[in-house]
Amino acid sequence: MIADTASAPDIGRAAAQAAVRVLRAKRPALDPLSIDVILGGARSHYGWTSRPVPDELLERIYHSAAAGPTSMNCCPARFLFVRSEAAKEKLAKSLRSANIAKMMAAPVTAVIAYDRQFWRDLPFLFPHEDRRALFEQNPALADETAFRNSTLQGAYFVIAARAHGLDVGPISGFSNEVVDAEFFGGSETKSNFLCNLGYADETALFEKLPRFPFDAVCSVQ
Image 1: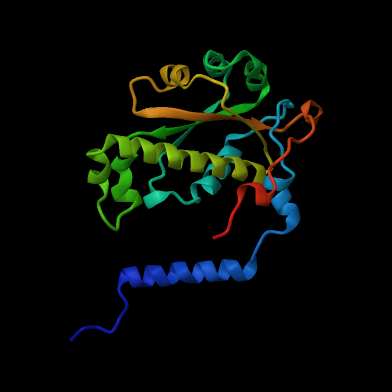
Image 2 (image 1 turned 180 degrees about the vertical axis):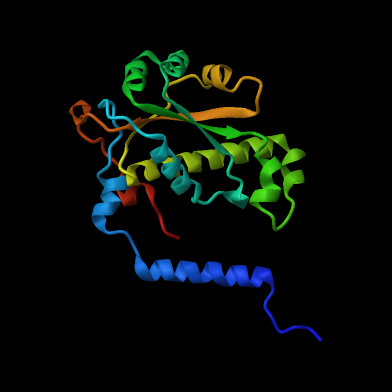
């Protein structure tokens, strides 16, 4: 006789669906002020106060960012937090001259990177089906997937940092090759972009630059 009980996967799905319904019932959407904090009214910052950023806060930000979606839950991003003077000196070698002072003044600079061999962890991250061969046999697809999804995770990280009360200053004016040589030499980890973190000195801000209106860059078909 077959027991009339739900399988473990069925129970897991039901619990996941119920959790989403409960969350939506509690908070269907963020209020306009909260959206301003993370996006609408938020700014990229260039000046920083000396107020420190504790490791515990970085960990909370990471856990919030890690909840964001990636394809096949592949989670290729790797985060290196540069805080010490020695590490900052190494990172400065990679920066364009205009960005060095900004980075040195920030309490922490995150190097958002990606693991080119992220697919090795797919049995843990995506246990439904073994997809490792898809990437192991196609390095170009692995690199494309790692770069795209680490960029997504970096964006989640920026928004999560703002949501947890930090200011951010993303940086693309640097040499990936130098960062990789200084911090990731001999590994399959590659840098994507940098992001200064801390509590901003707002006196360094200038007027907010324009954005396109909806009709200029959006269409509905």
